[in-house]
Amino acid sequence: MKSDLDRLMAERNLDAIVVEGPDGLESANPDYNYFVGGRHIPGLIIKKRGQPAMLLHGPWEQNEAEQTGLTLVSLNRWNLREILEEFPDRLEARVEHRRRIFTDLGVRGRVGVYGTVKAGPFFAVMSRLAQQIEGLELVAELDRDVISMARLTKDADEIERMRMVGQKTCAVVQAAVDFIRAGQIDGDGVRGAGGVQLTIGDVRRVMMREIAAQGLESPAGMIIAQGRDAGLPHARGDDDMPLRLGQAIVIDIFPREAGGGYYHDMTRTFAIGYAPPELQQAYNDVLGAFTMVTAAFEAGTPTKTYQDMVCTYFEERGHDTIRRTYPIEEGYIHSLGHGLGLEIHEDLSFSSLVDRGDTIEPGAVFTVEPGLYYPSRGFGVRIEDTYYCTSDGRFESLTPFPKELVIPVGQ
Image (tube, rainbow, N blue to C red):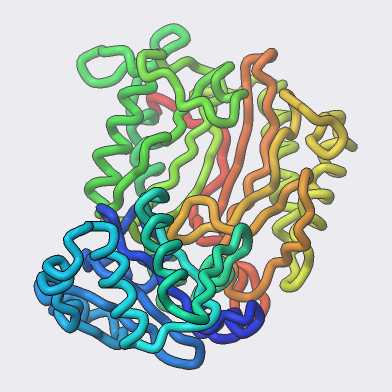
């Protein structure tokens, strides 16, 4: 949470943090978006330890800036025209502009730098800047940085926004189920209105329309994968493929608030009309793993505990796992989940490969997504909810959607 920033800065001996503003859309700059709340405000965030965060902005964005609740500083305080006249070289002018900002606002000592930037120009400016301000040490964190750690836990407002996105996401998946259910069986396929054979692309278009109607946006990559494609976790699916009875269909959807806000992430596996015994058994195993592990959650427990728990569960039922075999292409081949928020993958890991000592803390939001993948057998199964660890250590699913494999058609 933002209230953790001063503690995190002290732990890393940082005197200030600087978050570079957007080089385009705020939605592509989650660290900056974390402070401005998705508002379109080109600028710069500066926070000195023990003091409120400052938003440096232009006068055109005054109204938007006032809505952030941040301490506001007008960029007009530094006359850019005068700087450009005095320093005709563009690099030197940019360095001087930033030098004056840092000097006037007392930004000194160990300063962490964050935000999404063009690496070359940013490096050119900041490396020159460090040479010109005595005692300035620019700090770049490789992993588990201050802002990522603050973003791991969410406050009440963030959770309410994520809860709402979850409800809307479920409505999108329900629209897809209703669309399929309204079809008519024709041989081993499904026909819709006018007798047209339904395809994966038809389902995708229904979902994209509903995403827009719900006020969400969907980054590229939504998965609607059928048959063998369902056995490949990141196969997007073939839009020209006709819907087939009895085949696994994995729908993995991860929309966010329009404008680059908070994400939701959910997956359901369906079979139209009926499920063959092998697919039904795999589904039962995945649902059993999901139910077991979510019932076992306790705040403060290492995430690896739950990944190991699911691996053991699957291994006891005859499935290979990433814990036992690596590289691995069939069975349980990935981790149990990941953190979620302003990015689809935030810095909370359930990996079998690298144990960083991550634990589930109150305020954390993360996915739970066990799966089994058998492309050689023509199917895959994944079930995924987004979970929230409450302030008192309870666990709440933010994905209020049933887990039923078979979609009846023409009833």
